[in-house]
Length: 365
Ligand SMILES: Nc1ncnc2c1ncn2[C@@H]1O[C@H](COP(=O)(O)OP(=O)(O)OP(=O)(O)O)[C@@H](O)[C@H]1O
Ligand SMILES: [Mg+2]
Image: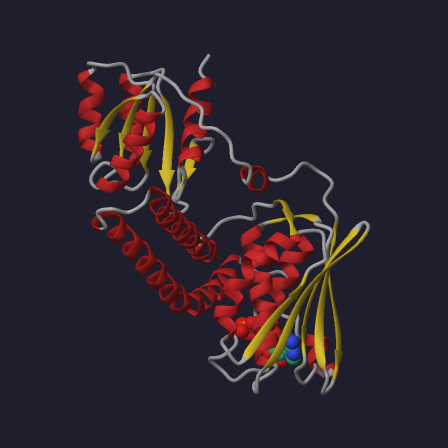
């Protein structure tokens, strides 16, 4: 049941529209929290140290939530090929359930029941977000008067199971026989594209899984997805959960970023790590600095999207002037970078910055 790229993109857009409203609302709340605590930190003259740390922790938590939100939005809007990696299914459900709750609205409760044993599967996380989103929206549509949706995980060695259940009207045999076809929908025109389940099927099959449906008219429906357990190494995301100390260095880094607050932050972080830092606000400035040749540049850390000259042009010019310099692109929208180029995805934290910079510099022979 082939689903082509454009179809995938158009369902993503529908999903993106649904998401955007909810996300904007959450984002404003988070910004209010961040600004409120930041102002208290600045204006309260005799704030106790312990309290200041608490405020800062609130700011960090809000910022982390905000970056989860953008990650989800971008995962939907990005046109990218499947990038499977080992993932714990429970983590995935936990991380997505907040977004799903925003999408289904308040008349419907979403309950999760996660198996105690964490079980890894090998999937593309943003595609799995789409699978969950499609199944949950279908479940919601099956219960126009409200009700409860249950997402459960289960592990029956070597099979990892995901079940999405509703207590809606169930599915008739006629619909059942056609519902995985692309563009098959029973919803009024303009409401459903009919692509949801065909996408689910395509994504799950590609991941080596299977989709089954149990349904009873008037009682409800359960979509049951079975994946093979993944035996390989833990994914980068899981490993990154462990706090590590930031590695340091003494090399010279040229930072090119047009957003001034971000540029200052990166400069401070790198300087604290022992590096010498040159700054440029755009591509022209960066190229001029590199060509002046007053200091040897060891690493170029550049935004991809810049006014005038873009990051790729900057990289070329800097490499010509400093052939041993490594290049690290910062990007936030899945912009194109040359194949094999090193990338640092925004938003990133201090430890991620420090380790990525160090790794690249250490690759030099
Ligand atoms: N949980 C469910 N309960 C009852 N019927 C369902 C359920 N899930 C799917 N269906 C039926 O299967 C049809 C196809 O579903 P599919 O997700 O492919 O498209 P859609 O939901 O109609 O459109 P879209 O996913 O683009 O919003 C639906 O129109 C509906 O009739
Ligand atoms: Mg659907």
